[in-house]
Length: 124
Image (cartoon, rainbow, N blue to C red):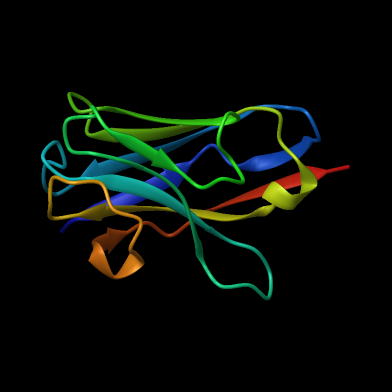
């Protein structure tokens, strides 16, 4: 059974940092682009960041560029999102996803596997 399990969410204050993890099991994701998306209450799920299968290419939403860093450890089959200088508007459920392709993409429809999400709440 293929699974993605996120962890690392929590309640923090504005300006704090968090690191999210997404552990994969059931298959290797080393050749797959993987990404982070988030969904705030009452909003659609939106793209946050993506990394290519090799880790050599990344892309970020403008709202997080310069504050968030996506990276992966293929040996551990794990994806990470380092979030610095958090803002209240970063509050959302964060989901990791994995594609079956090598190239990084922002398109949600391209993701075949999803985790259950982890809540990030940033207080002002």
